[in-house]
Length: 81
Image (tube, rainbow, N blue to C red; front, top):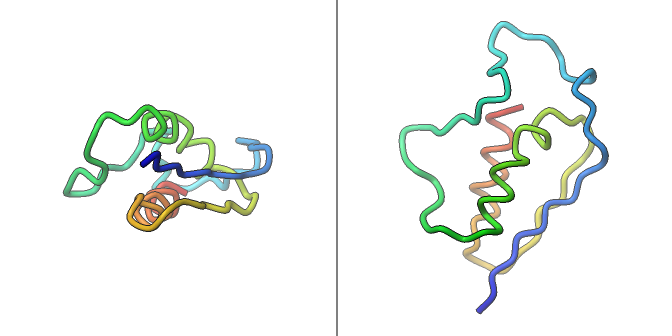
């Protein structure tokens, strides 16, 4: 099966990002465990754009089949915003 995760977001504008002493300078937070296992190209692409998505104030819709990691990716967006 071809598992797809689609992340839809509006344009990102780093100037909209609120300044904070906890800002991670665009570095992706990888809490305690590795969240995604495998070498899927779609996951790699999503991880590359994760900082832009997290910095955006636009709503994000994540779609995909059951078991594809939608909730994990949503939590990563939240933790990096």
